[in-house]
Amino acid sequence: MGEPKAEIRPLDRPGDLGWTIQAHGEVYAREYGWNTDFEALVARIVADYTDQDGPRGAWIAEVDGTRAGCVFCVPDPDAPDTARLRLLLVDPAARGLGLGTLLVRRCLDFARQAGFTRMTLWTNSVLAAARRIYQAHGFTLTAENRHHSFGTDLTGQTWSRLL
Image 1 (cartoon, rainbow, N blue to C red):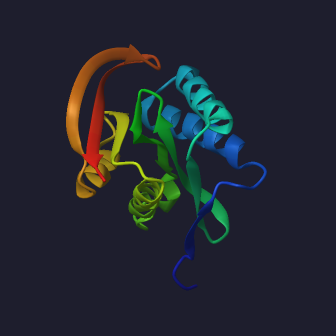
Image 2 (cartoon, helix red, strand yellow):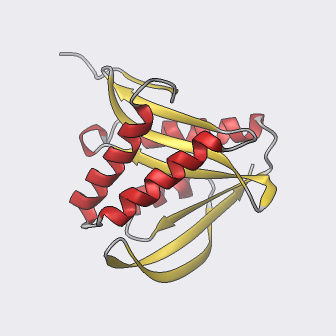
């Protein structure tokens, strides 16, 4: 068998939205013990995406035709010049193929083309692999706060960069 065929495509097929919610819920429960409160948050973010005005985009990573990751880019409602990177996920079985990097790059390119001048994101400190991708793309940590969410104690982080 040859190398896996990876591609990034727009989130535009039936099942993509539901897959995003389900995959986040399952992966974060398995890897971090997070409860269904996290899956509910993802469902709200996905629902808001479908109703949001302004430039927005979402992409699915596929490996050999199977969904393996996603990312969303939406306007920040509090800062018209700022885009928000949301819901970056790479399925554990597809890690190491560079999908996270490709997804973040697609999001940054979209935000620049849409006229945004800044991008922010919110994550948690336990997501070390995602943080490494963000740092490699020029994001810097701008705020941290401890919180109890998804059934566990966490440290939330806000990262940002100019475009």
